[in-house]
Image 1 (tube, rainbow, N blue to C red):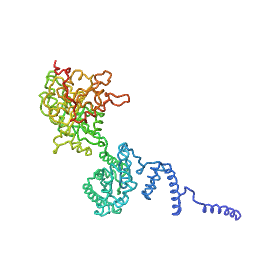
Image 2: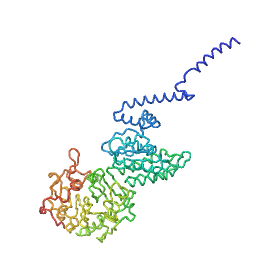
Image 3: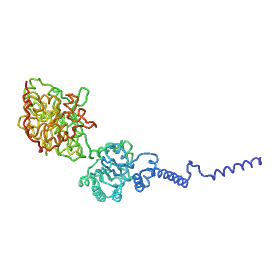
Image 4: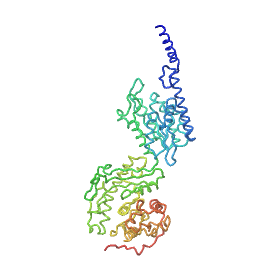
Length: 593
């Protein structure tokens, strides 16, 4: 037995000794602090090697950004950033290559701001270049030290910033003083500043969290922002009703849906402040409770399928210098036209008003020589001018336009819509208004301008009226402010409707009828413009071809032929006029059968 045991012991001992002395396997769980540190160092070295290899492949500008992040992110966020970059993941500190056609936005804030940055970028893709300060920005004291690094090179169109959670223990006088200094410095580098109110935190004594610390600092910040005219993005109020749903338990941070919600709110706020072309809509029946349907005129708020029929449009482009004039368009919304109008620096609205009366009238009433003009004026003003219709003021063009502009002033302050309202907001400043329309709309625009002095009247394919004579009535709007444009194949032209109206309006004293296809801008400064552009002899297309859109004529390169005409109609100085001529003798003024 002894001889058997000895070899067995001898065999086992070397095995045990070998197992005890061998180094841990690479993937083995560390058993002590030394092994843990060694494994961590090994992992960090591997990560650093991969990260540096990734950086080496980047363009110079992006490499410079990574060097900034390496210097600023700190021991907590930098390793996270490196791991995400090596794994090919996007994060809040991604390098942003500016699109020079878009505004530049900078986000400054703590980890709450960091968590919603990517949602803001997603929401504003194609609208703004959204950058983020290269840090978890912390308290105001850090901001004063690091602000120049965060601001980087160049200026900003908007800086959206916040300091609060990390300042919850900062004495209020110091917080106020530092925040004011930060605002002063940022205003030198940005066209606009937007303060994000600090989001709520819970009372958690062991973490030294107090809800009161945030409300106190938001109050201090509010006074500073008022003093310096800084915009306020009230995230505190926005998230407050949703804390139970979005805030992590006993934490200052939010869950994924909460971060996305905040990011969407921030993006909406920023977009409303940035210079770009805004297209806004509102239903007339929702912004004015006095608005009523008129089924007797086939004038309703929604069709049989429930599709809204009272949707109103507004457009302004804050990227171009504003001319301080408002176009009221009296036909259906025309996106191509509104794009150009806003590009000229004009504001524009398309109000929904009771204008479907013309298809409900008997010919003997409609064509008696006076009724059409009276009905148009009642539809425009909402005051009683005709016994044939009953259109109250809230459903006329004037009041619908006033209410729409009031709504726009409230809902879209970046558009500066209030400049078109009088002091008590009971009326528009009509000397700043351009009345415009096509066909039926141009006719009503001209009829209203006879009644109310306006800045200008633009009449596409109109006025389309052959029996009424209101065109010859005394005009509140000077005759040199009326501009017309039509196609010669339009039956309104071939039937002498347009030339008759233009003569009665007195436009011959400001120049001859000018063919825009043979006479370049400024078209001899005339108010009477025509075209003979190729519409394949289609009279219906001819009618609408003078307005931007699908029927408008294009050249061989696919560009609209009449861009210069449209700009002239809306922007030509009303004081520059053509040479007076005698009314054309071949235009019939009496079209009654």
